[in-house]
Length: 527
Image (tube, rainbow, N blue to C red; front, side, top):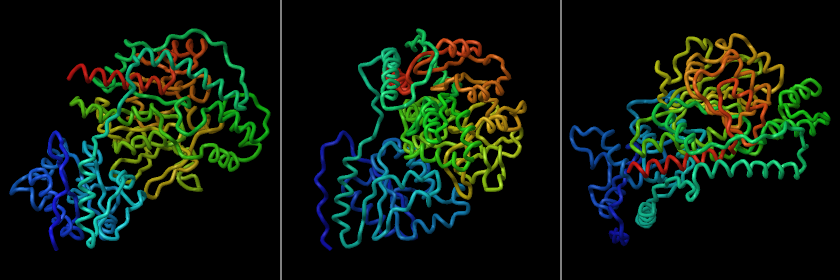
């Protein structure tokens, strides 16, 4: 076959770096042919293939990291036996130290600065996300390209164009707006949003009279950011004011009241849900909630900031810091944000109804590790596998769904409809004096030993106050903490103050954007 001339090179500041990942069993020939074309195009030193690049005694992991730090493209070659070999791993989510293909992919998806490109060989199709282990599940959401025997040269030409065009995606926070301006503007925007909601038919509720409560200023953002970056000592707690595709608790309560003709003006979701459960039955309540929580969640700025945070620190060359994030919401917008960023996280989900129809494991937490099978936390006081050390530092992000989840699953476990919603459920599971029997001790220690950042967490919802009261036993929080709400009132401000929590007025997403902008300015100033 006549060798095709290399694709015309475009001017670039430096040559592209390309890493080829493949399984020897079904892609070795294609990998070598591809290497020869790419080496002719970009130079031998800029294309990594284990059979060609690694010298005797070279540690492959160090080579991958060296190329990855300045890489332009990671090519994941997927042949006809690729998925079958992956499915032979038992369990699917367990780490196999000898599966270099898996480890390279995981490293690329979570540490690679360039673009990861799945390359489908022959008639191979892209594997479904549910068939992939969690550490590499993000691969299924990437745009794939094809490499076929009969059109090999043409396909490689297109791949070279993709490699040359591969940008290093970076978040560009809004410029021209200071953190304080963003926070101050949020309050007016929030009131406008509330007015729009009322105009669209949501029942107008009697709310306490608003009073002037300060917005976050530059000093506040600087303090919070320093605690996050320098100490890793901030625990974000997300309330119903931080939502994905979901209505907040007030609107959800109003929706249920209208749906079942209860005639209630109460904004308390637990009270309304209790009425529905008693009068109609829990199965009808669960179906109504499922319909109300559809379609799927869409991550907001708060979720994206938290998901990007570990990578932002790595890019800045700062010490790694990971957060424990508590959420009282039932959606999966936060998890989706982390999945989109290919960022590692463990999950701890409260099982309000159990893992099966018989209610097995009801009232316990389910731990879903990043690289292992889910496990029920049967002894919360003794459980030590959440990746939190004796100094309360985390080895990766931990997302704690303290009120359960509307849907989700991993491996043989499903947690659909596993959420604390009615008054009876709060009394049964969260109003116990022995909260250490429910919440793993590692979570409680990290929570009580940190600065809490309550975002969209309205104290007027009594069910949310229950958790606060039981964790801190009615005492003020030991460490300085903050509550951010878009429309706080004087009563809430007084309640937070009694708990040693400073209340500030801001929309949660605007608050996140202000923190993000400050991180960018701080990084620019230090470079």
